[in-house]
Length: 308
Image 1 (tube, helix red, strand yellow):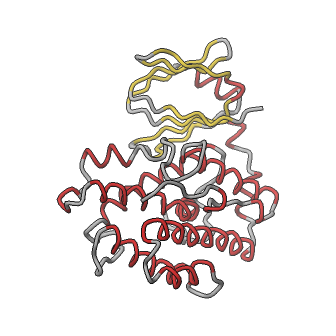
Image 2 (tube, helix red, strand yellow; image 1 turned 30 degrees about the horizontal axis):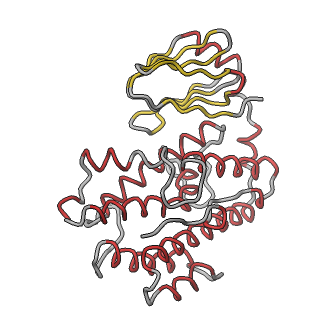
Image 3 (cartoon, rainbow, N blue to C red; image 1 turned 90 degrees about the horizontal axis):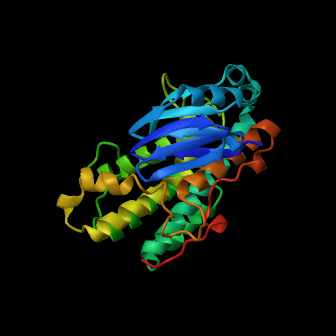
């Protein structure tokens, strides 16, 4: 049974398939895995050569190839029989409004819980923590917005030492760092969605727009605090605001976080492995029409660890 999502991220490599083995050759040697154990191949390498035999064998085994540019999926190659398998697409299209709302609520509940966990980690003695906990764990209208308002007050004061922080795409301060990190996270979510066959254009919370991928924005929400923590670490180690710019040192450092074991989680998998597990649970919830099968990442699943 094919189940591995193989990510090729060596800067330069050669991919081929011989004697039933998917092989990746780099300057450090060759790694191989049985092609029959592969469900999808995600290629984020900046310079990879792909032998035609691999394309044919991948097609025979029903394997999708996702080609990325700057880590964001740019092309999806799927076998002819897989491209006409509409079972999962029909499950997405036919989701009822109540089902979408339940899936979205589970997502937002996880996001708010994760924001609370991070706030407690970086500012456990902040007087606003009890109010944040009430908002994050409660059931009330505008939960996401009210939780975010208090969370960013706590985060910005204790990380960037400011009381007038405004979270926004075009705002200053640490916003450019956060925005770049979220872009890397979005690309990782998209890689996994394409790899397991989910169409990201059918969202559950974000509004669909032309050329948009609302489902990726939906499912990345609980993972945003992972980026916030990464940025917090950068600001802690670079307290001078002149270093709060998206230049080569920061880009190199932030792009590594999906493939490293996260330093604040008691996990045996790197973050992209955790993301894959969540995406698979969402797929199962769709195909079996049971929202409880969707398991968005939350602290009880992988506890915060380490010290601030």
